Image 1 (cartoon, rainbow, N blue to C red):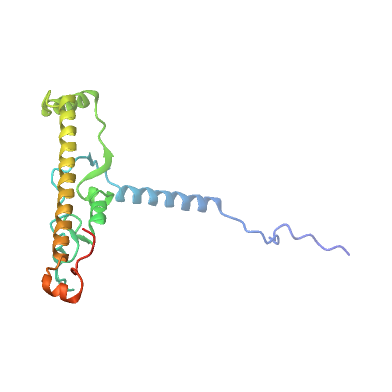
Image 2 (cartoon, one colour):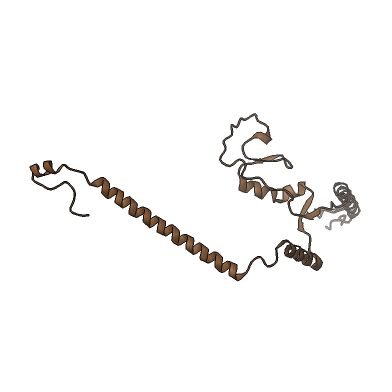
Length: 200
């Protein structure tokens, strides 16, 4: 007996079937949300100035060899170490302080990028001209160098001579201190000429 074929309308394959239209719609919505999120978080790019030379002197030696009482309730600017007023942080030693003020975080807080402005040929030539003007022309010759070397050698020889003389004087003083004056009558009574050594 043959069974009737009624499998045409029944889904018995157990495979998942996806609604392509629904998933395309979800993908479009997700892309729109991502684009909106990007446009909100990112405004126009910030233009930062290129790096430039410091126009102030970094004071690392003012606290050298000084003591300071540190309390836990002291404000940051009065704690032990170096205080950066731009970043409002305390750095414990001078090497780390230099690293901090030359670092990316500090420079960004000052409004500078870590890129250096490229110098043009005219700027380099102008810099050389300024350095030449600052230096006095003709102030140094080879004769000056020879004179300075000769003078230095003479000073060293003079110092050596003075050291030798001081040594001789100390030896003489030591020898005089060692000689003990003894009464000749006492020495003759005891049977010898003196307490001094035979070396002179």
